[in-house]
Length: 636
Image 1 (cartoon, rainbow, N blue to C red):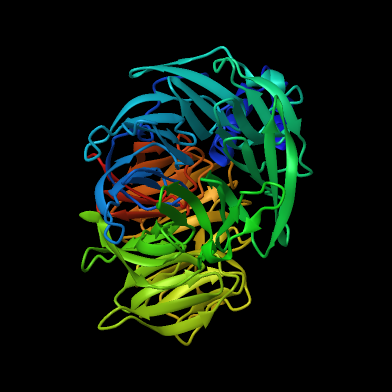
Image 2 (cartoon, rainbow, N blue to C red; image 1 turned 180 degrees about the horizontal axis):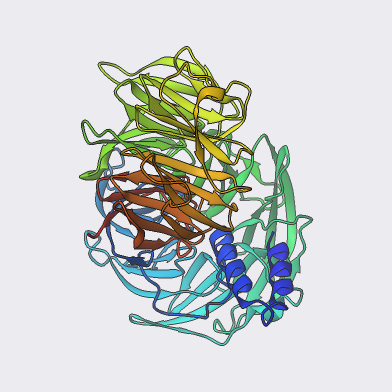
């Protein structure tokens, strides 16, 4: 993927003098899609929050639990871009000490050797150094960012080694709260282009890493500021591998997809390494490796596999230490007889390792957030995540509880009839009180739009027309791109049909429905209805398009209009408009005359993959998948 991106950028660079606007558009799209900002140089001033105009940050919740670390009784782990600190001195009762929100999804966490600071590989947020001398009041003391997303970090004394996809290894020197970039240039080790470092670790003499060019790479640390490659072991894969080391032992878990997990053991000798043994674990896929006290902990799809490394030529799987997890383990940290881990289904797990690994405690968080919706009657917030549906409140986001155990969620919406959930295969209605139960399930595997409430039923639009939780389906067997409703009127935008239709009931035939004129030869990408006004985006997907407002009181050809930049998602509430555009979320306002821009949030800084946009009063709710849920207040 990296090679494809680089070739595309090289090709487009030749167009700089021909069309600089197109180049700017491509670099913006590249940053939004991949996280790379190829125009940015090194900086030591990386913002903590996405740059915003006329928006005030109001809260954050959840995100993928991709990293954890442990120092004595202090555990650190991430939910998307948020770093959490917990006291686990009582393994069965972990206590939250504090949390701090950073810019991007956290990729890796490392404690300073003395335990007074945390080094965070914050993806597009770069390197973050957090002072935790008082773990109840963490504070950021230094940052470093470049064009690539920082994915790995390793600290040795005053030196900090960071790895990113575009620039490979970079070395920084820390003097108190100040960082400086050393002249070491890893690009000279990759003459054929950038590489992705899959993992790295170190012992007293070597910096060991895996990458897409060299496979397993050994670098001598005789001069830690200028490590020199002393050995390579090419791996027969394209993807980088996972490595862990202790003393003269290196353990490599292949990242090549296969039915069996290949694990290689190397012994460091002189300036190189020899392969001591290879073994395979069936029905297992690794996500990482830790080596402690001559034991290798390989964590992945089904839990943790433990190897005894007393004999490097014949490592043994320690069956009694095989901890099975119902969900893939994404990160693992080991400290003496305790450990912690994070899982794909949103759990932070505290492990007791005295005998057989056992779960001492587990905390559940909404992980991969795809949708949210506020019940206007109660103010309760419902959040659709990869691991289920959670209920919370806008006044206290962190006080959330799982209310529905459900997978493959795409959208959640709530109204007087209940909680509507669109999954990959169904449109379901859930009753939440007095007990949670599913009351309706309608098969609709190819639907594309979020559910809307119309005259007592929930409806979704897609390739099979408009499917209802009631008895009448509209536009049967006709593909519908998007629909909207205010409860009294339903508006549909059929696929390939340059216009919209309005329905006042569920029995009107399409041929009898009122036609809403739109611009010719342009499809409707999304629409909303608010106080009788129809708002719709029309134009090219990911290209130039526009937002229009239509109503019976507005004459054809006189609809208010404003140009947008690759808009694709739309939400409206009392004339306040939220639109996802290329690189940012735009907030606009319509008060009966012109459409005006009033605020914006740069999403490329994270970058945010936005799956749902919602408005509740002056609050904007952004479902950012891996990065969790963001809430912003529009300043008026």
